[in-house]
Structures are given as C-alpha cells and as structure tokens.
Amino acid sequence: MRIYVLFVLTVCYLNIGKGYVMQKECHQNCKCAIRRSKKRQAVCRGRDLHYIPQFPEMILSVIMSGTNLTNIDKNGFKNLTYIRLKELTLDNNLITFIHEDAFINLKYLDSLSIVQETNLAVNVIKVSVGKMKNKKSPIFIF
Ligand SMILES: *[C@@H]1O[C@H](CO)[C@@H](O)[C@H](O)[C@H]1NC(C)=O
Ligand SMILES: *[C@@H]1O[C@H](CO)[C@@H](O)[C@H](O)[C@H]1NC(C)=O
Image (cartoon, rainbow, N blue to C red; front, side, top):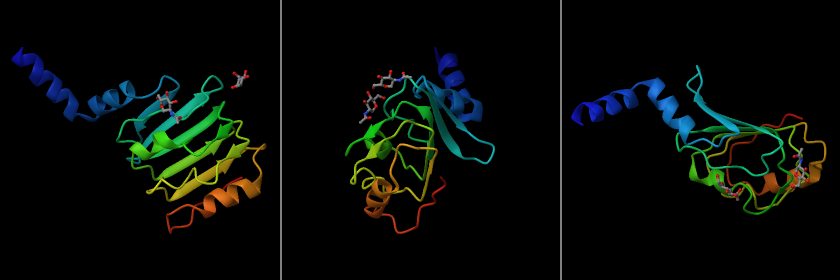
C-alpha cells in the first residue's frame, strides 16, 4: 500500500504524470497538454461538441476549433471562469452570436482570436469585446 502511494506521488511530480492527470480531467473532444513553450493549452475539436466544456485548472490557453458552438449566451463562457484563462481562440466553429456580457467574467483574458467565424457579425463582436474588463487590448485575427 505504501509503495503504491509513493509510486503515485512520484509519477505526479513528473511532467508526464502532470500531463496524464490533465488529460484525464479533459473533455473527450479536447487535448489538454503542456506545450514545449510551457504553454498549458487545451485544444477542442469536433462538430459533435456544442458547448465549451470544463478544463483542468492548470489550463491557461483554450482553442475551440471546428466545433458546433453556435450561440454563445450570457453564460456561454462560464466554464472558462473556473480557470485563469489568458488566451482564447475561436476558429472555424459555427458561431452566429455572442452575448454582449459573455466576456465580462473572463478576468485574466489578454488575448482573443476569432478566426473563420463567417456567420458572426463584426458588430456583435465589437459590442461584447467592448464590455471586457481587461485593460490590455485583445488581439483579433480574422
Ligand atoms: C450542430 O448542432 C445542431 C443543433 O445543435 C445540429 O442540428 C447539427 O446537426 C450539428 N452539426 C453537426 C455536424 O453535428
Ligand atoms: C460546462 O461543462 C459541462 C461539462 O463539462 C457541461 O455539461 C456544461 O454544459 C458546460 N456549461 C456551459 C455553460 O457551457
């Protein structure tokens, strides 16, 4: 029993162990990993995914790519408020709307990229981004 506990602790202190723990807490459509740049990033894909899931608390950067996210209502980013999210990329999802208050509680966000969201009107983005609390200006790439 004691040997088992020691083994678990040892594994947990290795990066490989950390990655394993992170992936276990990660949604099946997502890959949660520490990148070579030490970036703790989650990448979620798949048209069968229609919401933003919860992430391990170590994750700082989230990429939603090619999902079936359509309408982001007031609480649509709620699961991102449980982590210290610094970077968010929305790429080639099917987003048509983002509620003007959706970004308000993403307190740590300092980089936002919206790419290939062809059904999303620029005005809608402008309004919701205008309400972001963060003073640093976010980055947009279309
Ligand atoms: C995306 O979601 C909509 C409704 O939520 C559904 O009708 C559609 O089939 C989904 N698309 C795919 C490719 O799964
Ligand atoms: C938050 O994540 C859970 C499970 O990961 C999911 O069931 C729920 O719909 C998500 N909430 C929102 C607001 O997207």
